[in-house]
Length: 166
Image 1 (cartoon, rainbow, N blue to C red):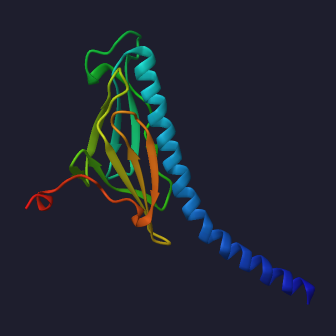
Image 2 (image 1 turned 120 degrees about the horizontal axis):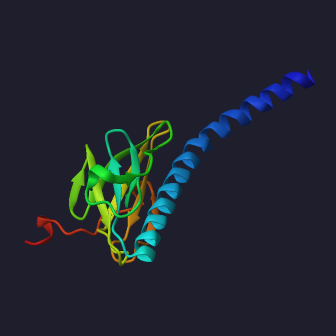
Image 3 (image 1 turned 60 degrees about the vertical axis):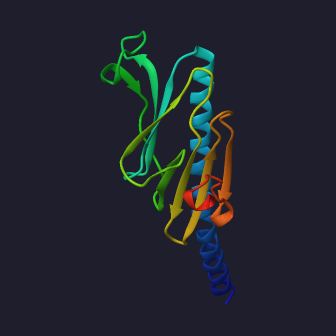
């Protein structure tokens, strides 16, 4: 009798934990991305060199492109540039789209440069979780590199559109 009650309690807690884990997984993923953006920005400022972020929307991954060659010294182009490994988003989380400035990107690989002074273009990474359904937005401010997080529909773009001008 006691064993069966314990098994029911464990089953209930397991179901509850499973509902919490997907949200935690998506938040951890966003925080890792924000940390990588911050590290790339700090390196660009400290070294006075151009770094880049590359987002692969189709495969839900991203990586950092450094300004260096494998052999040492500065890279002259992408053929000899050091790219860090792709960071794959966890299972069940995908990059739905990225808004770069006022351009919406839903497919392909896009590069965003981080200038030696730390400036970049403002962009928003929209991450989506399928089960249970959920959205998460990571907003990168262009001038400061400050990263903000928004759950669900809390984030609304303040980018003007043609409809804003009658």
